[in-house]
Length: 145
Image 1 (cartoon, rainbow, N blue to C red):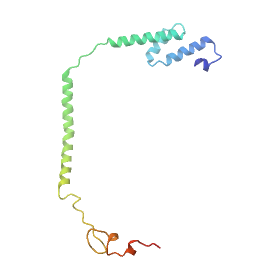
Image 2 (cartoon, helix red, strand yellow):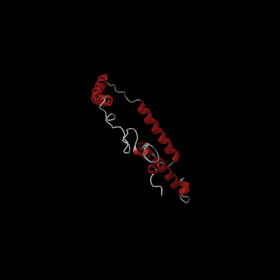
Image 3 (cartoon, one colour):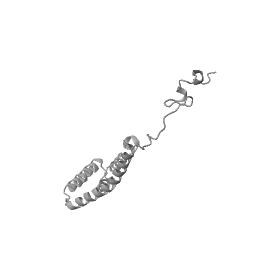
Image 4 (cartoon, rainbow, N blue to C red):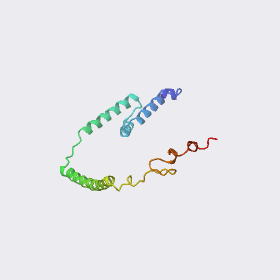
């Protein structure tokens, strides 16, 4: 890629640019910094070898870290606090839900308060004026002029 970007550059400049772009492209900036400080000759294969060595050393060091013991009473206290707070949230919701369902089952609900439909022409319940059997058919269709 560096050769394509700089076709007329000398070989050692291309090597320096490729090493720099390799170091900048490393995922761990700490490894890049160590490789940059440790390199004596600008050689891409040497930079790669150093990066791999540093990464292997870091992974080996991570594996030997000490494990801390966690006391179980801390988790028990947290669990109790969470149960209390969830109960404080659930109980009011249950009360509201019970009131709502009681209101739905009572005879005074809003659906029972509706009056039946009554025709304006004949006064009989159960249909509206446009569906009235006594309403003339010509008027029912409106002005078709």
